[in-house]
Image (cartoon, rainbow, N blue to C red; front, side):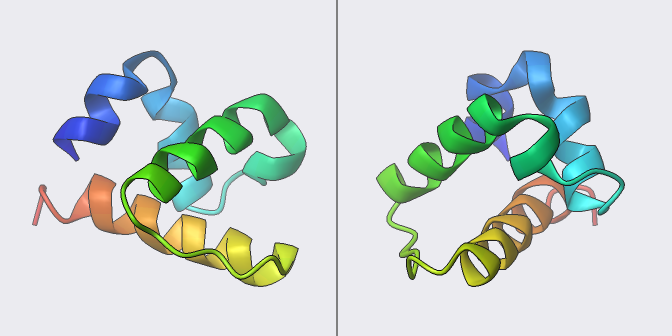
Length: 71
């Protein structure tokens, strides 16, 4: 999570809420959503172009980055 935390430190609470499915990031924070997608694309994550699948991929990445370090 270090890179994610450094890049989005002001928004980490929002990203945690999205990972927990408390909010829909693409609807509540569309600009942040686009920035996070771009961040993961730069990290090598492949998105499909299907909005539903891409959102699930993003949530999986967030969960991995936010919670993998705390386990």
